[in-house]
Image (tube, rainbow, N blue to C red; front, top):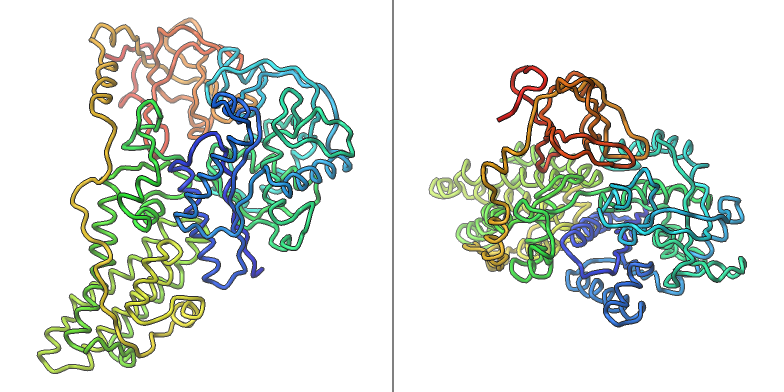
Amino acid sequence: MSNKAYITTPIYYVNDIPHIGHAYTTIIADSLARFYRLKGYDTFFLTGTDEHGQKIEQAALAKGKSAKEYADEISAKFKALWDDFDISYDCFIRTTDENHKLGAQKAFETMFKNGDIYKGEYEGHYCVSCETFFTDSQLINDEYCPDCGKITTLVKEESYFFRLSAYQDKLLKWYQDADDCVMPRAKKNEVINFVKQGLRDLSITRASFDWGIKLPPSLNDSKHVLYVWLDALVNYISALGYGTDEKNFSYWPASFHLVGKDILRFHSIYWPAFLMSLNLPLPKHIAAHGWWTRNGEKMSKSKGNVVNPREVTEAYGLENFRYFMLREVPFGQDGDFSQKALIDRVNSDLGNELGNLLNRIIGMSGKYNNYELDSSSVLKFYEKDISTAHAILKNVESYMCELQTNKYLEELWKVLTIANQSITIYEPWTKMKEGKIEEVSAIIALTANLLAKVSILFSPVMPKTAQNIAKSLGFELNAKSYEQLIINEGLLDKTIITPIAPLFPRIEKELMSTPEPAVQIKEIKKELINADKFFASKIQIGTIVKAETIEKSDKLLKLFVDIGEEKPRQILSGIKVYYDTKSLEGMQVCVVTNLKPIKIMGLESCGMVLTAEDKDGITLITPQNVKSVGATVK
């Protein structure tokens, strides 16, 4: 096993200030980097900002600034936030850095020399917001982006192309051979299905704007700039010196590329193909997390409910925020931020179980043992308790390596439960009355050792809290204590416990302002309709007689639904991730049948099947019992 670890966040696009999604990715990466450092790995942690492209050029123009001035301003906000959050990055890269420019140009030149780049002409619909081209068949209603819904622009221009199609079979083989190259598995399956539908060569330069990295001088074609996604993805190797000074290149390949699910395709298809062309090793893991809502609603500026991570930490504390983000939601699933949920986590998990345990240890040691901590009798009286805890701790690290941070913390809290329950079960106050002083000393040492072991392992998540606990219990939190207490399953040396203030004062009320009630009431009123308007929708029972996949779509399925008409209706539905075609055939569903037909990706859709959606995904709404096709839903 290599003793090096290379952890990356995506480089964040400088079109707006950091939000909770950026913070989530960065906190996961930071915890992972701290975890590997704790284990003694030589770790390199990279983050930064993505600053080129037409969208940035347009945003700067709207602000009356040059693109570089605008990029400098927003990039500085990201760096300042990560510094204030004590993010332990080793390099903060900007795509406007000279070293990155040279690395990106070298990558382009190498792929060109290897025969994977050719010059041609591109005509297609371009979405500035997504920085992506789409074919006619992919558009919604012939002009709207299928990803973000914004209007596209028809562009025809000279372009250099990357032979992405040549790497289809090699990518599929990689997915097959590298079991966890894309995480979680459901996302890997989505990527595989997309690639199997066929890959088209990728336009990788733009000639219609200037804000980007020019082509290598050797090509003598200065009117082109690199496509922003080629430019951005190369950061993972240019940060290590690719194309310049490669003294840090021994960290490659990346251990973990952490990304949001919306950019997984770029990282799991384009990036590995580029690396294959460059004859470089592929990353070990590309891991995609979900999105965050607020109080169950999608965040938007118009609603005023976007979560500002700085505001949260100023109100509730950085350590509490870090714990909440990593404990609240399984990796890969969407999460919901609410002050109530955060307060519950702080008061229950952190206050009642963690903080209160330290308070009890300090109190017992002061009352019964003059704050002395002596572990010499722990195994004599309480070997079973310590062994049970060691069995949990032996397996817990695999959850962090699999990015199951919520499960990692759940398991650690089981050890805290053992510690808290041991005080209740063994009643040191009773034993003290019985004169069993050695047993009382052992109880104090048992609970202190369990807390010490837990604090070492949750230090990647809550580093300052763990340091405070270590200081109180009289040991140094470092790789040496990790080896002594976790790897070797040893116990704390004889020491003196130092009283400290309670770590987690109880939070009695919400500490952040919420969106103005007037805005919410106004929105609710807008959504109110009368019964006549509701009954204008005709909902009928239909039976899916056939279901087909749609080429080039990773979301849509084509359904043929019998509702008692002369022939089944063709309806497109975005349920591909949740249902396979065979399981749908014969299923009865609820269909809105009096909608105007629309075209999606060039295909007509004549109706809408009803679904229910929550944090676990989408489920079709079906009748409880089999009904006649065409039956009306009232």
